[in-house]
Image 1 (cartoon, one colour):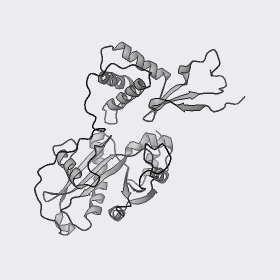
Image 2 (cartoon, one colour):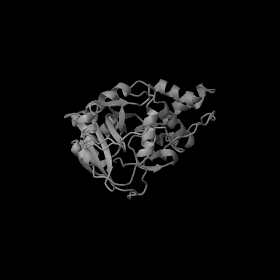
Image 3 (tube, helix red, strand yellow):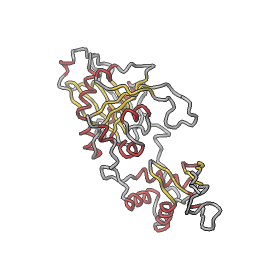
Image 4 (cartoon, one colour):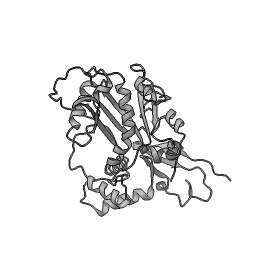
Length: 330
């Protein structure tokens, strides 16, 4: 008798219960050695956690009855050597996993000891700053040099960047998730542009087809992509070719800046252009490649129907060997 593929039924909190109909030589429902726990598997952030991992977490909680939720997530990272590429523990990812299991009823976490505000749910807008008033800049690009790129993430200038984006970008400021960098660009001491980069979206069909990587390679190597989330030429600046020039300059330095903070390079850049508002001229002039259109469904789609405007997807390889590098599994 052959093996028939099992069915999966979603439970709350992203938990999947796999129910095998027939598995040759293995326990399946109706046999004496079958246990419901054998069906349990959690898929979270690209990893699968089976019953053995969940039992381990239960024992970890039992062994540390006075530990807080924060302390338990750190102990879990330490025990599993769950670290980012820069050596920092994946504390928030571990905490999310614990909360997922707790809400699904598979573990019992200790009571909350504090409830800090959730800035994702209740977004805190950057405070407006008393900026100086600058005269319009309309000189040729050659007159602005040297241009200075300041990576302001985790510096005193980060609040200035956030306020500029909130005040002058049509999308406003949104706190980035995951790895991210922020750049303020100056010309002779005057701010002229802001550029933000963050971790890339996990699934973009036209991009994935262009790179040609497998799903496993994508999960392993998605961290080597950077997504241009915000790009702002400040309103007092009117300089021909400045936008494309800054993109070209950024492409030559972003990998080194990323590696300095996160201990790994970047091999591919990407962005989205709302074609109802823009034509992507500066990206095209900077030799970015048009990859295709998004589906318009967003990452939380449940209907498989467009619920937002279609965006143009643009990409820029930072190495001629980017397909080979991003397609590696080891």
